[in-house]
Length: 252
Image (cartoon, rainbow, N blue to C red):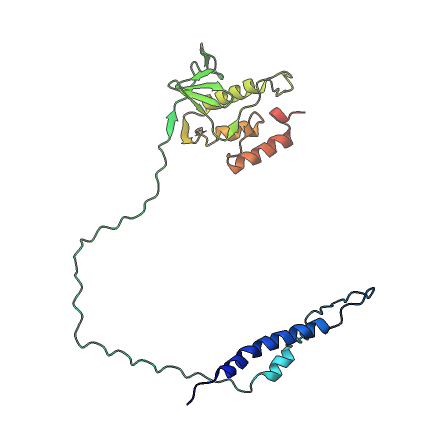
């Protein structure tokens, strides 16, 4: 095949130049904006919004639901393990001596204390001591609700003493103090009904005389002491009776 001639090569090189020149001439011939003409306004429209889709209602979901649901096949069950023919080894055993059974016993109450409480000389009020109070044998009345034995003071549990200035008037003595009346009552009762049987009852002691009379309840029943919140129920009954009879602190 013969090589192209020089004139043919020149034509191929001039063709792009002619195209560029023709394009420039066409642009130059376009009419420009006329003087006084309004400027062109380019309006850009927003993209079209998608149409709203109705939310699926329960009726629609029920209508579009397939009539039958595909059922998945369950995997085949594994075959049960066959019991081993070999017996299990015996567990180790150990002999333990039988321990004796302990029978629950009734809790023991503290042993009561017995005070002689006899009066000296056969009087009704007992002998007075240098430290105050009334000494009755091995018992000493040291307060409206307190006794002392062998120098150890004990409070009668379940009763509170009256105020030092409280009055418990009687027909014979309108200015009788309740504390003195309570101590005189304890001394007379202990001297006439000895011995005393006293047992610890936290935080004090509970004492009864030989006639089975509780000294704390006796004071409350005569209006010479007040029951405490932890006192037995019969102390509250005794206070009601003293109020009704206008005794001691409840005298009108």
